[in-house]
Picture 1 (spheres, rainbow, N blue to C red):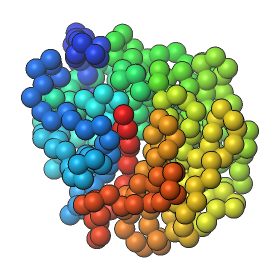
Picture 2 (cartoon, helix red, strand yellow):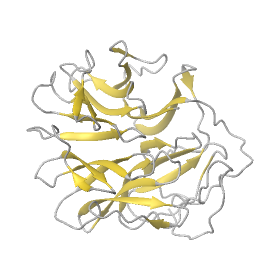
Picture 3 (cartoon, rainbow, N blue to C red):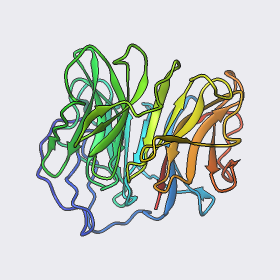
Picture 4 (tube, one colour):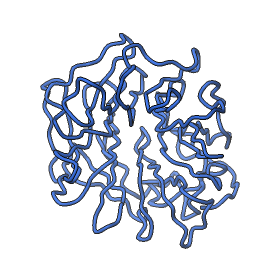
Length: 329
């Protein structure tokens, strides 16, 4: 993944995107989109098949898959997908090297669905590990984690200025790990996981008010994998806290009213993890398994009828589908 600094350019009239670099230049997102960019209700996820991990894109409305030509690698695992709100870009992590160069360790790659190619992300990747990418819902900013000097830190990148965005209180130096950022519309509120208190718990950073632990979220267990809605109100996450159904369970928290939202029949005695919540807080995608030896499958939970459904054609049966990210317009 390269360290070039090409000039920024306009991706579309709707989206002022910079040229993105990091996984090497395979092409660029231009106004002449030739690829499949359709789908209002999409799930990007990791599909483990025959010992390899690739990114898949599933259309919940069509009940089938969207193509991602030229994206996945045959030599490296592709993980941690996120899709921009406009549906044109996918970000993910990889340790690619063959034919693409490398900035070192794990880097963030950006794929353009219109150009069907990897894009350039100037100044994003370094010799440290860059992981856990999440687009803000404004289609521009990208939250991610940089593992530098033995500590993980959340960073916010704005490609329009090819620079990191200052976020006092979340980027401060200390003997702790911050991970799994989940930004709101503009990255002015970011939920993330940190071991600042000695164990992994969910924190919420606000640009106007700094760092806080929301009321009622303190737990004797562990928290992981937060997902924040675009309006910054709905916070979904996985936890081993007391009172759950067993193992890891999914929780939904209303940050506006400081209350948990009931999720009847979602959790089981097995594990439920990696929730992804839509903007209205009415739909949650997650991965689940009945026992620790089972394969992971993806499920869609609807709050209106308290029902979990496995999307058509999205059951692997004998292999793992994990790390869902929900784009719900």
